Image (cartoon, rainbow, N blue to C red):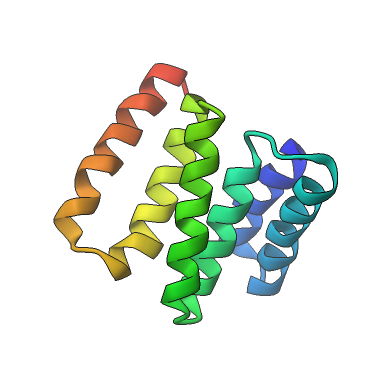
Length: 117
């Protein structure tokens, strides 16, 4: 799953949108069939951002909160720096006020510095 997650980060910038969606859905499919892990939250966060780009803000908000819930339950502090800025710069920025998103992005930045990511 780590390989797929790294591919997803790379393809989201330089490949067609469908490739990123395919990889995000593959992470979700693996999580459903084999169990939830720390990287599941990143798959749901990517899927949430793609829904947000399609103007499906209601479902994007639901899946984004689900990704945050998985991350909190797994105590995945090393993933804060990847998931928080991703969600709060795309999904929650469109559904919440901007000032409410800034503190969490700053917290993610500090957690990333602690984790070395």
